Amino acid sequence: MRWLVLATFLAACGSDQELALLPASGDAGATGGSGGATGSGGATGGCTSSAQCSGDKLFCNVALGRCVACLVPENCKEAGKACDPGGECREACTGEAECTPLGKHCDLPTGTCVECGNDAHCSSGDEPLCVLGKCRQCKGDPDCASRADKQFCSQESECVECLSDGHCESGQTCDLAEHHCE
Figure (cartoon, one colour):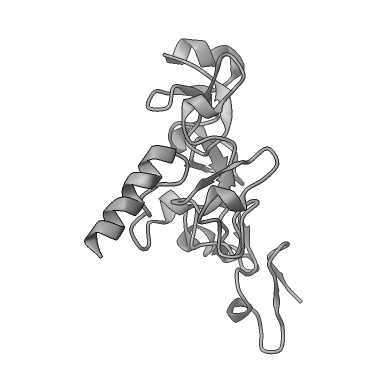
């Protein structure tokens, strides 16, 4: 059994497209919330393999459970682009000065210009938290607690009405595409 696990690990390392460590349970900041029902472009519950991805989001970020445009800088084909923390190809940078004219900040670990590097960069009242380089509404359900009708944090880091049927009143179901009870 150990050899099978090792062989699977080595095969995934060779592809560099799908191997990712899953965040610790409850690590809402890494997942963008308490877990949405679908990953962008992936199967229900999020993608688990790049084979589930298509279009302009060809790679599965297993840790996020969604299809993304890139996992590593080499996935960005356009010159001057690099892979940002959320899996999008963005302007490459080596310091803050390169991003300031764009109204952005340099994320040094990924070498990309991003909307935010920390919560202080998010000045919008509706999107005060920095999640994967973008200003968003929430990192987890507690960030949505003050919103009477939208108390759950979706995978896209937005406060929504529901993520599952259990979040709706008896007899209602959760529209997973729109995250509202019907």
